[in-house]
Length: 163
Image 1 (spheres, rainbow, N blue to C red):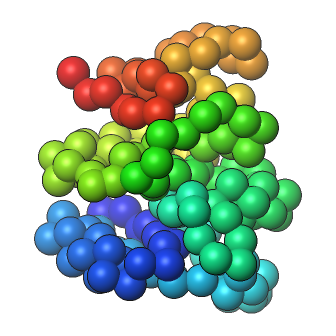
Image 2 (image 1 turned 180 degrees about the vertical axis):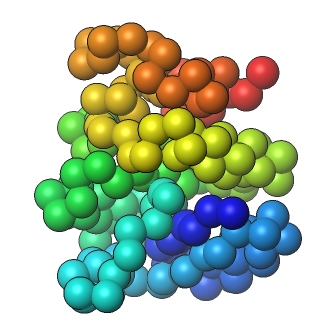
């Protein structure tokens, strides 16, 4: 199964997320501080996960800044923002493959996890331009079929709609 990281300052949500991913038979590492996570990623034993889920609004460093910092180190890394607030498009979000709205739906989360794992089997790591295909834009893509297994997930601004 997959391996994921989740960064959120809400420890109750971190525990819930960890329990859910364990039920889905995925491994997950959770972190309550984006600054500490960034330091952890620079450790030589760090192994990039299949995807990094990150809250957007956190103390010390917001999720978009964390994504920007991590993208400089790991340009092929996939990111999923998680927030209870409506997201507006900005430069940092261009590096985000998907957005999961809080409170998240159990089935939606399962579908996202399964799709990421399936996509990893056909494309080892998506680049940021390929992720844009998942957001329903083609300005940086050769084809919207960059990952056919995720093609049924269309991002309409702030919410991933799953048919």
